[in-house]
Length: 413
Image 1 (cartoon, one colour):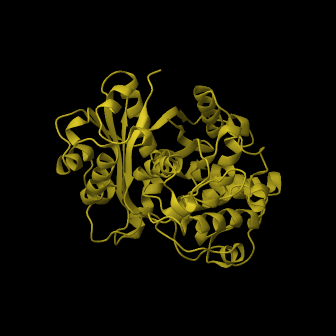
Image 2 (tube, helix red, strand yellow):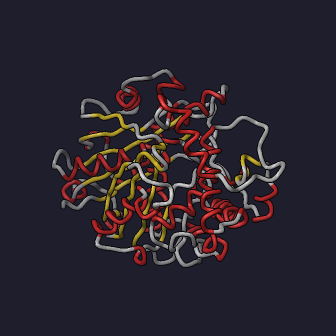
Image 3 (cartoon, helix red, strand yellow):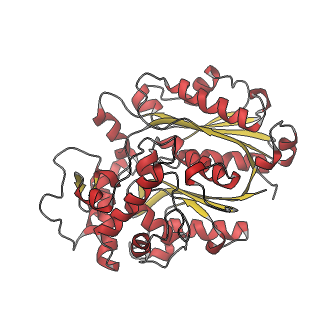
């Protein structure tokens, strides 16, 4: 296959940006990525825009990419709008890679941007209710909630405040894992404490406050076993990546040694399976395909960014990625295996729980972190000697798993 590189990448600070517009955030990310690559907007051959909030929250139901890109200097070229729930940004990157490998262009842009913080929070939370088959919403919810049966929430562990029903589903996934493998709430809290600790060193993170495990456990409850710091917030932000072939790389003025090679790019969708069939999960299938494509395995990975919309997500995904056997994600987190300085650092950025989760920008934000790590430019959160990095980013729910899931493996040039 044609070698593909990330030549430039940038992101805004994720967080609440009440005074900024969506195209302002997108423009900052684009300018940063172009400067990082050493190329101009006129060099881009194809562009992919990832976003979910444009229609329901801003009213731009159609052609959001064309509208936003026209305001920040991208016109005339092929522009595609990508929506794959929380995996939209990674899907845009995957399509950009495909365009380059197909010979459609030498240089492609993937950009994700969202404005989720609006006065009507219920409207923002409703976005998550669209991340499954809406014609069978109640049936979906009942099926997923049943996964948590057998674990009785203790008194006072349910929030009186309204939250997305997806939090109840994440909690059901926690309880399934707890019942099957003996995973504890403290182990889930260890993931969250680790990620909030990592975020202290990340200037792009929405939250930069460290918490102990006991502080995580004592925080306001969402729904058992999840507490507030274990869950990703509503976030505004943008991220952009400039991808290219070898020919495209030669056109750029940036330092070639800072380019990062894409060793694997894999997208998979859900399949109907029993909740207990973990080896057949979309995350596991995608990970195995990515390792095969890269000619590498779990032991070759030096650092990972995984989708932790709740802390339980990290436990599930480190198992899917093969870092530990199924069922050992919780104990490994409590041992410190995934902490900076541990066996394989996971979410050195702080993860979605701390860095933030502006849906369409999330996957590209994960890749930004991994590119920084491979370049040795991650500052206080740097993983020593990182050569290979892996990203996992899922979106939506279908059956008992993510509807769409992306895996990217990156390597130093």
